[in-house]
Image 1 (cartoon, rainbow, N blue to C red):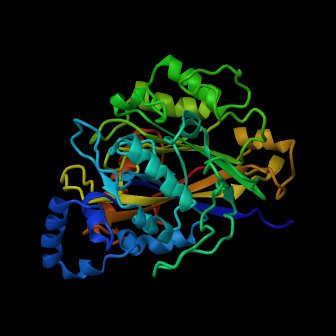
Image 2 (cartoon, one colour):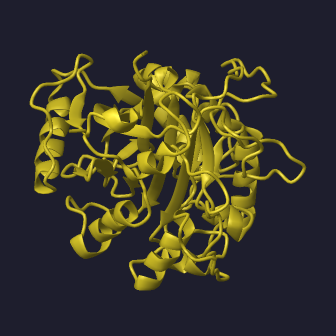
Length: 439
């Protein structure tokens, strides 16, 4: 019998391609003050005159091209709408043409539940949504309707095979992505067809800003019992069918086969805090795994890396850190240092699983197919962390000898140990930090 297949899923934190990053692209939103600032910066760094859709990803681009799926938090609106959300300190936007940068890195999924999606009002959010749909990049966490904001994005493994857009701007009428989303007359973010093999569901939510809790097309969560009940109803097939105007019960999987993998992408917690709060953030993360069948919690928002937790053979990334942006440096928390967080998953092996027990997803699928057949679950094998540094609006992989690589490794090792999770002492063959997730 052949060995089960292995898949690589890349996760990164905040991808902020607005403001000064947007101004570096040939086509950008109209903002004279930002344009003057960028012009001054480029005069001192002439190489930035050639900034292209590939530039934000720097030397990390091969990692994205080699992955089976790529998932990010898109920390900006994508719009030319000029009216910002009132009384907000920072309002980010990028020109819709620059979604080409996401296509360049073969991004499959962009989380829209964060504190910048509505920076240019609901009109800006709608243009963001339409731009991602046109690019065939799946999203969740915000949308045109409440249902669209609360239901999961649907991705396929293996990724559906489409033509990739060329860097020179060639039009691509199909898609490079693993999403099943398509160009229906209503531009629905729902699935337009079943995945041939593995289906991945990705939900998204944010715990701030609180002002947006009243926006029905934004998936806001807090840490109340009401939110926990709603999340369980939303994510589990056995929950009651009750619903509410806030989205309770929408997007449930009751009438469909369960996914091979369930991911929850969440923008949570305060900026610049090393440890996730126990009674709120950690409690929610454990609840998502214990009660909602989530396999991977993809956390972001802190602006710097945090520890990871292996919890019941599932994975919680509490803070991916910033990936690419134009932010000022915080020397204590090193918000210029992030990572590509590569999760290695393997097709389930049924009763012969090396973990010795069945995961939630594997148990659900045992009755639907044998190993290798459609419906077989996916098991987490390990997390591989590739440290990066944002340098002049580009994400650059760090060499294992770089002192910043050492800093990231030591910080993740210490913070993860505080969460009861061990990081391998030795690095991987590519210089990556490794956390085993099975056994």
